[in-house]
Image (cartoon, rainbow, N blue to C red; front, top):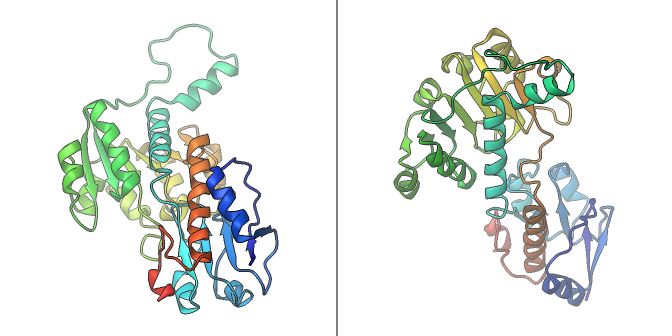
Length: 315
């Protein structure tokens, strides 16, 4: 017995010894290239899993994405070929929520600007009006998409005595109870939020969900945070809103064509920019790899992976 697993990125993280033992027992061999004998794929978002790739690996059983989002995977194409696709939910929820709040506070209190100001040597004395930012405590936080991460971001707002609004396809009663959140329509969310934090998955329906029209509906002086997927926001429209003063600031961990960033964003002082590091803590990244490997192992053993996106592929 032995399985050949395409893993284009060599993860440096030490994983649970039991996982290592099971990989050895199954005779798993990790490879850096895809071929006709590939049994499984363990990949990051940068690997596009489409029909063309799937056709190159007729023996493929599983695609184990090391991410919670899976917009890089053509799930219907996988299902049609009997390939189960998986992701890594839960394990990165808290780390990504922390990152969203880091961006929110940084944008509100102009932390990147302050850091650059101090390092430049321009700070000569304390001044009454230097780098005035926006209040966070007691303001309104809008959660666009109250999934695991969106709810975790909302829970953190309780400590800041914020009113929490959210959108979701269905009511989140426990979330409402623990955070006093209120479910509202999309337009209401835009109009009433002082801070808008984006947490919807990327799909055909959500691409450019936040464009010029939606930005115009937001409060003047509002702040936008995106730790979900870059293409959800029309970056050109965002640049115009930031330059005009419609939005006070933005905090972005993801970009429309990353790693390329709209040149207008790079020129603006009122944007906090991060290189897609929402889940970048030691423990979160290690658990993401472990979750993906557990999904892969289950599929190779003919079992249903814990985080299957298309369980019907194994039926």
